[in-house]
Length: 501
Image (cartoon, rainbow, N blue to C red; front, side):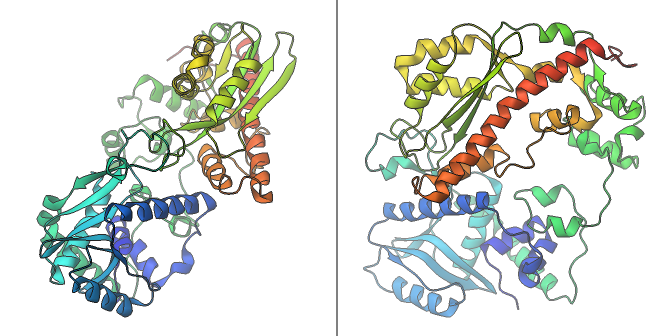
């Protein structure tokens, strides 16, 4: 019988084939990238800190393959009344081996605590995790008065110095969920064992489940060689799952095959028409929308990271902390200059970043952004650096968002349903993209920066900082190129479906 674990059980709930591969074909998995590794490391740090809420406990060590030794050590510690808590307790029941983050003595029983690097303990996947542990622990003969999930309290404001652990963490009681799930968990465990005893893997096609609740590491393998529709229904902007199910029930999986009388909203109909004709759609007001600016123009982009454990006084768990900006300055005559700031010390970046931005940006002219993210970052900077609040408020008053201009006035078939600038710009200017950059998205930028702070003077960190500068600069250059190209299109191109929908 193949042993199950917490992670394997959750994998099986997501997809039986994922569980099969976890047991028999780990070689088919896509290795975790540096972004995922940083997230793993963050979870480890939070878990170790959580142990301090139950001081005096004992850690059960041993390697992953030393299960019997870990179980024996756990049993010995549980038998010692002087041990108030056990960290990484090892328990096994009916072929399921678990490590409990914290097992806290409660009278003659034990409270079961699962620590998560998150702020919402009520997530279904977390409750299923703790429900399995409860099933294993009670099945092994333990009395579990309470079982729950320990998360970071999003309302905790770090004052500096040592963390107040009672305020930093919040407990979500999942005992009722665990009790209600006992029979179902047992049936699922048996079902997984039966499936794993079969001579061949289950035949499960790829689908939405490949990405919920987590992206499956076997997706690349399972989807290799598959032919997906060039204009699949997933590219129909914000199509409700029920509407998609209606189309699939009709045997329709391509946008161009949707009947004209099928009820789509205005945006979805634009997309359908653009796909059918192969031509972009533009409204008659694109040119006008692009003129709602004041020269000179400042193109602004922030990068931020979200440390789980607050690093700086006045911040909360997972609060977005801007650490970098890129600023392109364009004159009416077409002149272009670039300014930037990247905080390379392990200190609160916001005061120095805010001062650099205020000094670099002029007092007149529109500040071009793409989405509402920069406004949110400016709001945060106002609170963090109140002495510059009036200057930052003045910058906010000059913001001009290019995203609504694109979304309301232009659609190209090569957008493939996305209005992300990383989809929009290459559709209009194919030679302008992020593919050659070492860092090519915001999540990678955030985790790379957080990792670099561990040793900011190291050669590796210096390389990361240079890659961050290149990435952030590309983001604002992209806005320059996009606004210029849209202006050219608005004054030179017409289409058969212009203003028709």
